[in-house]
Length: 350
Picture (cartoon, rainbow, N blue to C red):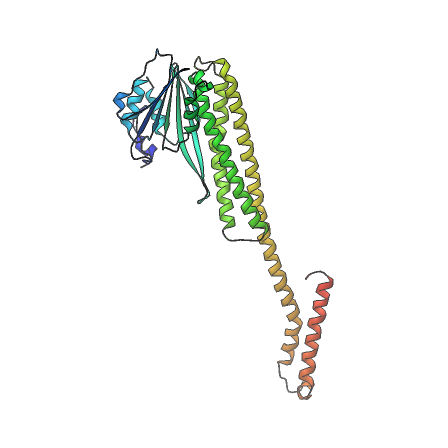
């Protein structure tokens, strides 16, 4: 049953998950850091999760796995998250978006991977909630996406440790968008590979694979285009949760988003050109075959005509009783074929 079928008739804000279970057990990481210290803990029981809204330290909670609705609801209760936000977190078909609330900002992104064996893009939802001194992350499975950020936090004196929760939210978005460039590089490698195959005249599965890449590029474009407006809203936001000094980082994020969108547009045009090149090559090869068959048919037309006349066997045909007539007719037919081939060569039809 799909998410929307399951949600039919239910009240808005009903917390429900109908997606695939991508991890065996939900993993909860609780990282609390300040300028001088960082503490990392794995929470085994959701009842252990606490939040001190008056603390000067930043609390970063990463929840991996969305199939346990009770954990999502408990997290929402601890951090005072609206039920509509919890509903969107569990709906992994969300488009990238940002929602502003009085006490927090809700951000939805798409973490994208390129599956080279299937030539397809894998979509995973990343939900981020930015609060005054906390950031919540909800991801579908553990793929070490945020490992570089954890490493930066462990380094004393790093900018990450000296900045607020809004900078952490920026860093999380930045690493997701950085993965788009890695994805685009892999797509470009496949584009070059299939371009070489088409130029070399190889036909095996090329059309299907190029069309599949074109469809995946469209899927990528649909996931990235809303991100442009999302980042622009964060850059222009008048919310007190985003400090003015950090807005420049969101502006940089906007530039990266534009670069990704431009490259997907270039790849779309390249894929269209590859399809046209493939179809043009197939048409040229068909024309070559038809040309050869036409030449053969044209050469045999007069020969068939001569053979048809002498195949009638009428009694009064004078050549029937001439001893050398058979060889003469064969010679004439050979001469006609040679003359026609010479004529076609001069006309550059062969």
